[in-house]
Length: 160
Picture 1: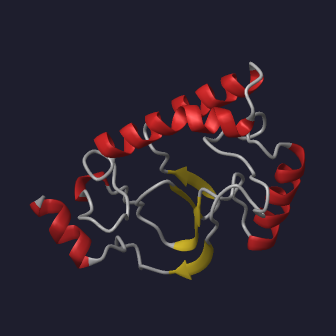
Picture 2: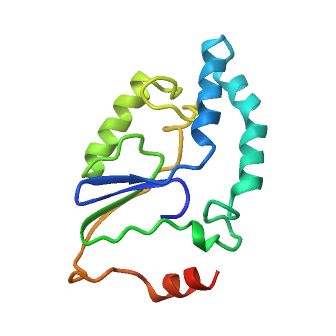
């Protein structure tokens, strides 16, 4: 797993959150609950988000950002069977895209600023249909009890 994403392997959930994300998101929630607008609260935490990215991104935490990927930070899950991979734009990952979308729409209606059900560093902004980008893929694989690992990742992880 690279970046702030999530997956399910045969119904077992895994995530790969950014190290400082929860702390910064909680600060945003506290600011909104103190009376700051969602926009103002977001602007207040942006410097912390930037600092966190500059200090950790591809140094202690792997992301795809156009620069060399921090190979030791890749989270590898041995998997066979049903695999679902998704971005963090789905606050509640489910076994089908339709179910994940349905829960997202319910969430956006109930908690558009991500301050109760699901805490995040940003919420829904006017003109957008969601608070974050979304990607979802579900596929099946069978590795015959052998780890399914690309040789490239194995070689580079060992050499870095």
